[in-house]
Image (tube, rainbow, N blue to C red; front, side, top):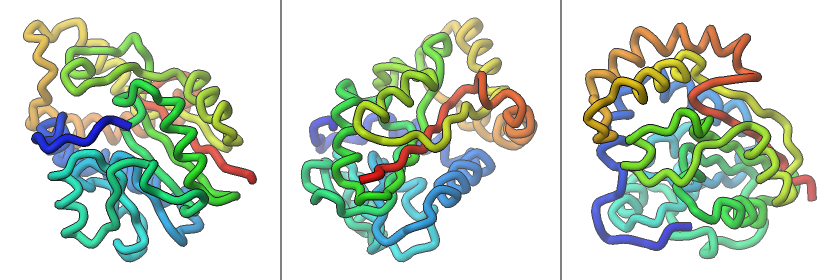
Length: 234
């Protein structure tokens, strides 16, 4: 886990731009709910500004948000969520479900983070992981927000298996985003890595619905992102 910081959340501008992606965020919240069958106690690892912390139909007090940034933690606490700075602050086996979206790529020791998530899950607990896919798609935005890597399915599954998880599902998402990101990489001459909120809104409204449909046949082989579900069996 990254060290705590009292400065403005790194990548907050990007998160605020992505808040405009209503359809995309609704899709991700749906995935979180789909695999969150047992919601006795839930963990949002790397909660950021809390975009997905309320995705499940449970009281905020049953959701613990792990977030190293002190400003973001204050925001989360004000919304009623439990907060922690690191996984080390949490007890063994305390959660029935954990999810983490676009976080592992920011952590240099991603294997240690996944091992920590395994530790805090109770036997039978599930972990939902969503990350950027394919090193081929690395752009200036990855560098700007501090990404160490993008993942392929076999790499992420091996990471989870190494911590002890049994893999239940693995699939790529946002098939058209794969090709859009290739184009962005080829033609972005400014190399600033900044997200244009207007572009986010356009993509969300007109492109992402079609991308979801295309991801049905193409999900096993390509997409801009990747999601994997693992279960702790004992």
